[in-house]
Image (tube, rainbow, N blue to C red; front, side):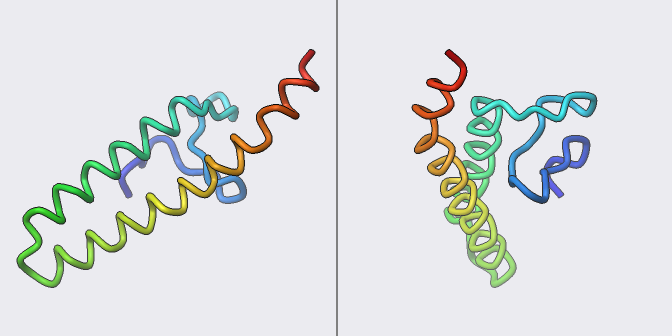
Length: 85
């Protein structure tokens, strides 16, 4: 597991800001997924064995799932902004 001390929330799929704080920050989750994306690009560049290709596929799938979650959050941003006013 990449982020063993900040476990991913099973319901929302987001990473919390800290172990004591259950709130997730969009910025932190974007940084997390960019790190995973960079790792998948590195594996893709040196994928000469089947294990590397499998790991590349798994990391790319994680990026797609996080992209979907962040897209859903951003589509509700205007509503959340109006509620906070």
